[in-house]
Length: 150
Image (cartoon, rainbow, N blue to C red; front, side, top):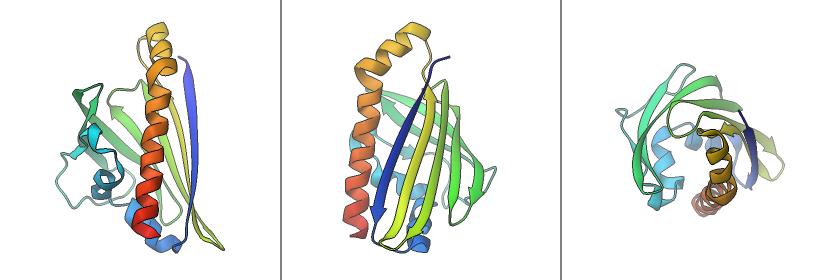
């Protein structure tokens, strides 16, 4: 299985507890996800964030609505949490969210290890579309987070 890694960083000039409080609420994902993905949480809200929490939602992938279930496998407020795909479009999705207090405010770090299904076709899809789509999603997220907190 070919795995890929995406690393993103963003500095937000707000204190760590405020930033973590925003990101630990799954309901805020809709605010920072591009509208064309049609993000919709199915799990009843409010959702208690803790290790072991499962969150069900739908997104559109290539215009097709898909069910996605994630597990919060690690939860260390206000410094880190990890979500892992249990069901969804990827063969592997392991997303570590890290938050660090810095003199300028808070440093957000996202490290995602992911893999696609379908072997060689998945690798081709990664080159032609998936890696670009993920970059666009995080660019959008960064812009929205800046607007919310700056």
